[in-house]
Amino acid sequence: MGAYSNSLKVKDALNQYFSQYHFQDGGYHLKWFKIKLGPLYFPLPNIKARVDAVKIHDIHHLVTEYDANMKGEVEIGGWEIASGCGHYYVAWILNFGSFFYGMLFHPRTLLKAFLRGRRSATNLYYNVVYDDRLLNRTVGELRETIDGDASKRNSVNDYLLFVLCCLVPLSIIVVLIYIFFLLINYFL
Image 1 (cartoon, rainbow, N blue to C red):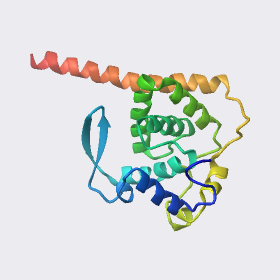
Image 2 (spheres, rainbow, N blue to C red; image 1 turned 180 degrees about the vertical axis):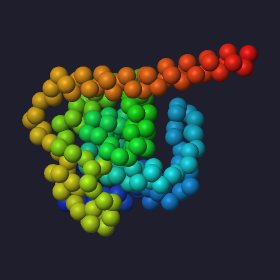
Image 3 (cartoon, one colour; image 1 turned 90 degrees about the vertical axis):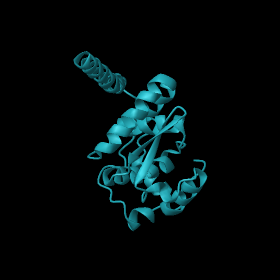
Image 4 (cartoon, rainbow, N blue to C red; image 1 turned 45 degrees about the vertical axis):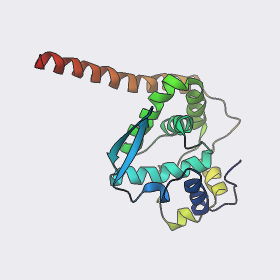
């Protein structure tokens, strides 16, 4: 792999990642975080559930080597949706946001990352505790744990699941538009 060598400890790779993308210690301690939509930034509270999910999400960036830019968030979002986010409900929500963006602006990239996620053996949202033991493992050890069989071919079911996942954000948008018009008719 490229930027994060297999022999690098996760904690050292995270420091490199934070430095590269100008994240102040991951921003885990901040009260607010920002989501960028086009040229606009929207502040949201940095709740504990989000921090817990983002700690794992950041390590997934190291293991997969998806960048922390808009295209990279599409990739990691597709990969995490495909490999599952377990009980991390905030990860599901944020990843489906990235998924929707990917559907519009990076559909091929999204599909490729999704299919890679379907071939993965697991990810760190399952049965992993974010602690010193995890941070002292090497990136290579995590890659071995997470990577599935690279020669494995995706099945028709993987493609069908992708289509179903595309329907989730589209359905939410339709419902929100419907509610918006109901409110407009109610108040007019």
